[in-house]
Every structure is written in C-alpha cells, then in structure tokens.
Length: 303
Image 1: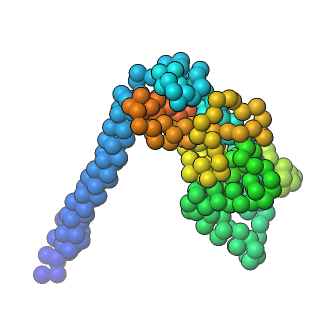
Image 2: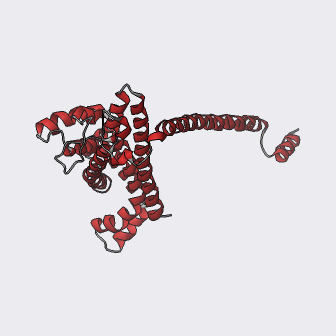
C-alpha cells in the first residue's frame, strides 16, 4: 500500500488536497479580474459620457471668441473667457514657482538628511501626510485669514497662488520623496565611494534619476490646483472681470470661477459658454499631463 501511495504521488506530482485547492484559485482570480475590469469600464463610460456631453453642449461656442473676448453679462454671443484664461495661467505659474522648489527641497531633507529616529522629523512626516487629505476649503479659510488679511496681500494673484501652493505642497513632497526613494541605494554608495560629497551625490546622481517621478507628481498636483474653485471663491476671486492681470498684486479670476458664474446664469446661452470653458480647461490640463508624460519618458532610467 505504501508503494501505491508513493507511485500515485510521483505520478500526479502533488497530493490530492493541494490539487483540489488549486482548482478554486483560478476561479477566484478570474472573478477578481472581472471585478477590476467592470470597475474600470464604469469609470471610463461615465468619463466618456461627460466629455461627449460637454463637447456637444459647448460646440457652438468653441471658436476664437472664447479666448479672445472678455466676459459679457448682457450679450452672451460676444462673451469670452480671456480674463479667466490669463488669470488661470498667472495663478498656476506662480503656484508652481512657489511650491515646486519648496516641495523638492523638503523632500530632499526628509529623505536624505533627516534622522527618522528624531521625534520632530516624525512629527513633520505625520503632518505632511495628514495635510494631503485636508479639504481645499480649509486652505481657503487659512489663505483668507492669514495671507489675505493677516499679511495684507488682499484679493490678489499673490494670495491665490500662495494658497494653492499650500494646498498642493504636501502632494508634491510625497511624490518627490517616493521618486527619490526609488533611486537604487547602490547609486548613492557608488558616488560616495568615488569621493563625492553627499550634496554632489544628490545633485548629480539622485535628482536627475528622480526627475521623471518628481515631474509626474508635481504636474498632477498642479492639475488639481488648476481645477480648484472653492478656496479661490472664499479668497474673493472675482466672478466678473473684464481685464487681464498685470502682476501679482492684480485682482484675478480663473476658469473654474468663470464656469461657476456662467452655470449660475438662467439663460441657456451661458450654459454653452460654460461648456466651452470646460473644454478649454480640459485642454490646458491635457497639455500639462502631456508635458509630465514627456518628461517621464525623456528622463526615465532603467536600473
């Protein structure tokens, strides 16, 4: 009998119990894969439906008037979003100028210099992770109370860009840290072994290798900032403005605020204007994300 069992085990290659258990595993895997595909399909279908709806609604106004004319509450046929487009560019440009260097330098300190055993470094990390989940309206209250009124900057491009910088700064820090952490430790050890200082290793080896991840995370964070309306409305972003910003101390409006204003109007012509402005905003977002993809592909390394 013992030889029969051995012969059976040698023939089948595995005992009976694991073989029965293995039969159920592919079924569970297939069910899990089908669930993933179904979830993806639901998201894609709704996204495509929204895009098609917005393009169809805004198609009559997708012409040069939308970016060459200023808003007009009397004649919707001649209204445009030039001031909102230029305001969006001004605010996002200064948001990037403020938050990207700060976020990258903070990530370098936390990842390369900070001692994780120090209690203050642990407090900093916990606060950064918590701030990434704070609602945007809270940053609007912070910007209104401290930046606009406390520092006396008023309802200007500077206030808006600083507030949005605080909003996306935790995301930039987290993404940059992950990109730095993905660089192999052997690169650091080889650079230090050849006599380079720690800063030379960071500047010449780690940062160039981490650029793809940093660029992707940073532009995705700015993509979030460009679509925010709640904190800017709280800061006093104008809903009707007929001039372009001329500096950081100028009043401003942005595309999300302009879209909100047009959607609030009762006439159907403003709905078409809002849809056209949404398409313009999506084009700007697509351009930013395309830049992130290009940077990632251009500077990517295979280890």
